[in-house]
Amino acid sequence: MKTPIILLAAATLLASPAEAQTIRVGVTAGPHAQIMEQVVPEAKKLGLQIKVIEFSDYVIPNQALANGDIEANSFQHEPYLKNQMAKTDWKLATVGLTIATPMGFYSKKFKKFDDVPNGALVAIQNDPSNAARSLRLLADNGIIKLREGAGVSAGLTEMVDNPKKLKFVELDAAQLPRSLPDVDIAAVNNNYALQAGLDPIKDSILKEKNDSPWVNVLVVREQDKDKPWVKTFVSAYQTPSVKQFIAEKFKGAYVAAW
Image (cartoon, rainbow, N blue to C red; front, side, top):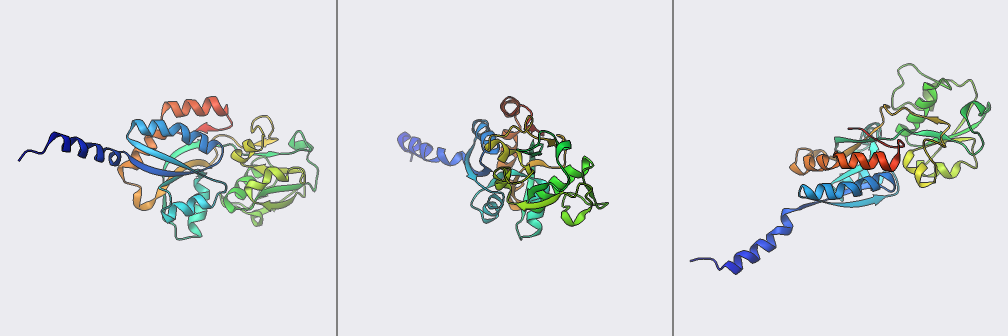
């Protein structure tokens, strides 16, 4: 018995939506969200639908991923991811590079770092990987000295010399721009700097080089890393059009890392 053509057509229409897989991708508000919105149409061309989910902090996107509330995230560098995984039972995996975000120190009181006085109050992040990043930037510029062998997880206890007698206060990364009136200098991650109206190139008084270890990454659950959609997702992100958007939109404040 032949199946009526009209039934075949109906079956085709019902099957079509399932063919385009949808993934939920967690990002932090600001540049990571803006870039991911550019990835959405590139992924659609490859048969992958992306729903962008914005978060306001650095902890929840990994927790949401580990819990299965999202399928991927794009907001963090690998040292931060490794630090988070070391403290939890999350099984997450890096699957691709995104952007380098040269972090800087900012001040409402001083135009250049040489003007910062002895005993100045310095605000840095209260999460270990970003605090280490701030301390490493100071050490790389000869302002403090860290214990030999201190790496991307160095904390204040690894500081072995502080000639300017700087005083440190650790705050949530999102609060650092708001702390600027109350401290002498503050380390601010680029996404929060831009949200606060700071220009990472013009306004920072000390800035990382583009080739720091803190390149941002795309992350999925360990169990998903070899699934076909992951390769499609990475390919959609690492396209010439997305790279061009990053260059034109952020003008060096963020740079493509692939």
